[in-house]
Image (tube, one colour):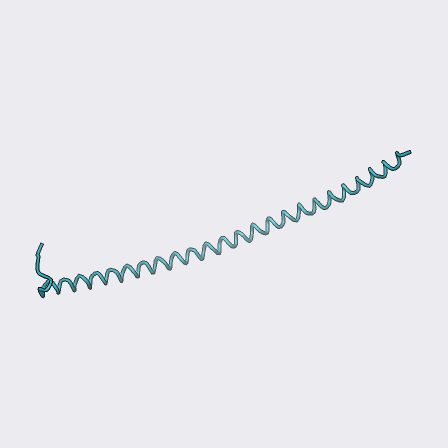
Length: 96
């Protein structure tokens, strides 16, 4: 390894070259990270849209199922009310 003092013109020139090269490498890395970030953001947006569509479909299915269950409960409540009326009527008839 060539050990020249830092105030040596050749050493100073090499140091400047090294700094310029390092800056160029960092600029390239920043550009690559920027491109990567853009791709990641794009992917996140796409996934958010896909998730939203899927969620909307699932909510529709759940709503449809809840409607069916609510209609069945309502129907059965009516049937139970009819049975209760009949039982009360029969009970009244049996009393002396």
